Length: 148
Image 1 (tube, one colour):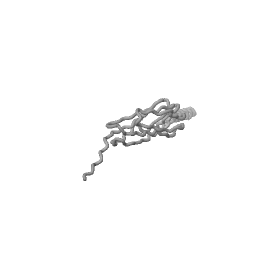
Image 2: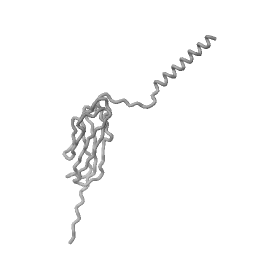
Image 3: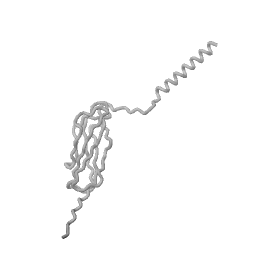
Image 4: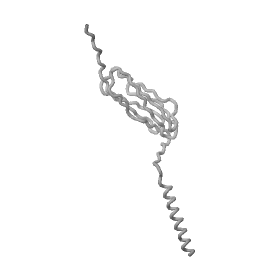
């Protein structure tokens, strides 16, 4: 009788241990690990202004998050021409916090489809990242002449 009880107790412990081990290794929700060092993740990589009139000045704010484990510092922002003026968060962006890159575009002297790259240089693991502004510039309608 002692052997039967002892065998049942060992079987119960073994089954309980297997169940405990199984529940420990099965994650309840997917876990996202932050990248080691600073990492920049933009909410959007491209913004389309649609149709605008020649000479219009438009602006868009690109928001990003530091998805890394160390402070993110933007060292500079490059644009492809003088028609685009950038501004950006100058202070370090702590892990999990949000910063911005603003692009102001002056369409004077431009016509048709435009796609302008904004290159963000930082201390992130990917040292440079591009975002884009897109627009279609139409000729400004001429004012209607008065007839006397």
